[in-house]
Length: 370
Image (cartoon, rainbow, N blue to C red; front, side, top):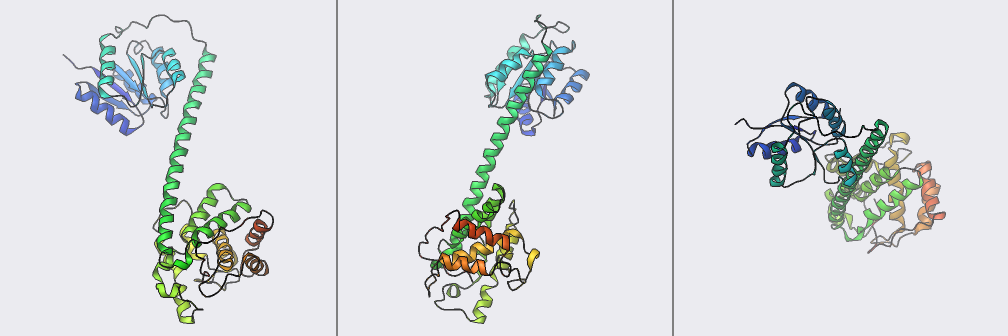
């Protein structure tokens, strides 16, 4: 006895593979298509005994495939199964069956249950050349309206799922970044919390400047790791209870470059490595490590620079009490256009004086960001 031939239409390779494996293991022959248009062309050339199709596919989706299938006398007698993702609701099923489908199954279905449905349909399928039982003529306008509504609904749900997945990935990335930041700060108890406070302030400045949520998240991420390059600086230099000598400060100045080297291999959605490399550059070219000037410095790095200075000046050092927020803002105000970007400086000052922003209290104080 010749085994039944089943056509599988699904744009997802993994989905096709699972169906092929399940059906061939049960003795059926299978062949596949990546979308509705391809499935229709293949079936008209070599008709299957049954078709299983997804709904969301390129070129031609499953709904349109079903309409074309049922309108073709050479195919209409062949059992038609929708096998779609488990977010499908009752309205999806009702509409699919109204188009002429024989079954509406939700992924994932236990293999035994799927094979039972296939067996039942193959044993009770309509003879070749016999059309389905008569139905009332379809109101084409109504069908198209509902067709569009069903597709829009499914696309909206799919976008929601993608957004949720993206949010989870961002949260995982942020958790990893925070862990790395804590490892860096663990080498110097005086800087505990410095990077996180800089991250919060930098993101707030970016928001005040009108940057969108995604950009602000990038700034926050860069703030959390802006001092990661200090892992290459001897711990005794970081915790030195006095001002550094020229030679000691030269060791500190390597940290932006080291940070860039560490982060450049990570595929962030933002230029985090470049921002970290440039966060000690100054508008007049007096910064380090490259002595960049003005527009040579990325805006993200200019935001980090101001946030870094404000947080560091307002916090305590091992050898000196913090100057306080008023002194930090005065420093930014007086040197806007010289050391600091004018727009960033204005946004930072407005953030504290107009929006009543405050830097969270440090656990043990932060070392001045050298």
